[in-house]
Image (cartoon, rainbow, N blue to C red; front, top):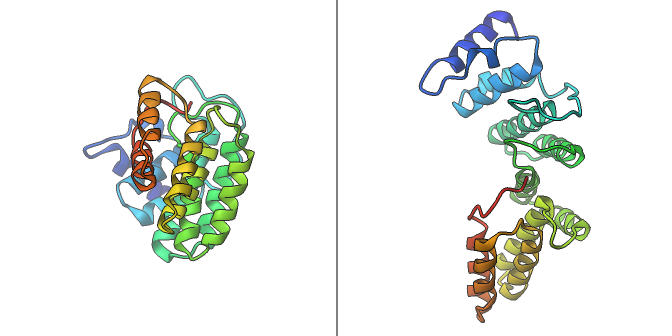
Length: 231
C-alpha cells in the first residue's frame, strides 16, 4: 500500500456522516491505526480499500498486554481485523479454506488473551467459523468441533465458546427434527451464560413448557436477548 492510497483512505474514514477522529488513524506506520482504517472501510462497504489496508495488518504479532485506558488492545485489533478479512474473502470467493484459517487464528487469540475485550464478540468468532464450515458442506467437521468445545466447558461459568458450541449443535438437531435433543442442548447452553434476574425468569418459564418444539423455540428466542455482558 502506497502513502498516497493511505491518505485517500484516511480522508474517507475521517469524513462523512460517521467520521473517525483523526488521532486514531494518523500514523500509517502503526498497524493498529491501519487496523482501524481497514475495518471502517469494510463497514462502509469499500471492500477493495478494506482488503488493501487489512492485508498489511494480519501478519503482525500483537502484544499480549492489558488494553489501554481508551481504545482496544493489540490482540483485539488483530481479532477484529482477521474477522473482517475472513468475511471479505468469504464474500468474494465463497470458499471456506482461507476464511476458516483466519477465523481459527482469531479464535486462538481470543482463547489465549487473559484480559477483557471491549468490542469483539469472542463467542461470535467461533460461531462464524462453524457457520462457514456448515455453509461449505462441511457440517460433520463443524459438529465435531462444536462437540469438542462443548465437552471442555464447565457448567455455570461464563463461557461464550461452550455456549455458542451448544447453540450450534442445538440448531443442527432442530433442523433434523429432533426438538427434544435441541431443547436439551440449549438448556445446557444456558449453563454457560452469565446470569441475572431476567435471564433466570425467562429460563424457568421456558423450562416449564412441555412440548419439545415449543420449548426449543422459546429457548432459541432467548439467544437474541442481551441479558448481560460476557465480560
